[in-house]
Length: 185
Image (cartoon, rainbow, N blue to C red; front, side, top):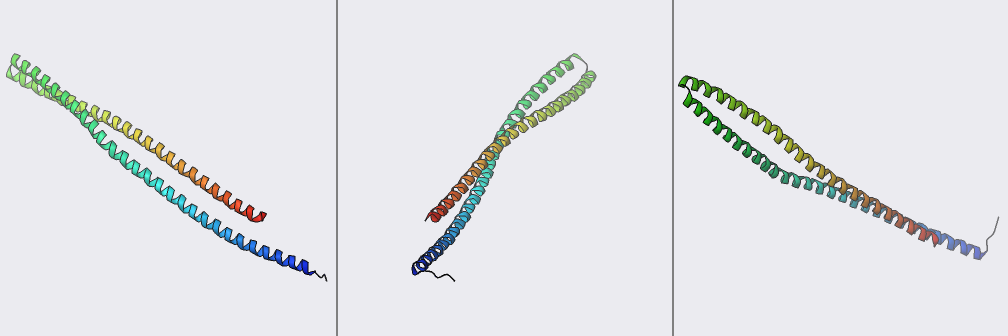
């Protein structure tokens, strides 16, 4: 059996004490790193929730802004069509009146009935065309607005993800730095 000198025993005790202290510091450091990791995860989650809520709010504001504009566009188009219809009705009435003056009452009544049918048909066709045009205009406006919203949302999410990765990288580097400092002691 080997016997150790008192100096060897003293060095062994000091080494054991140093190892015990290092173990304690390592445990504290691990707890600190874990605590910081949890805090960063919470911050990341809060940032993501905030970004999502901001995107939703932006979408609602855009939708609120689009509706009055669409209503204004539709109303303007309807006013133009009403004006055109009124002009067509007036012109048709004048034409019918001239024909009535030229012809007998029986023939005039027949023409008046035919003209009213034609006017109704033209008005119906005009309304169909208006609806188709308005549908296209509304569709284009909504698609353009949705495209802008999607681009804004994607940019916000990408920015948050970038910040998350940077934060995690800094936390890992800080942890490694502390471990290296403890190890070098």
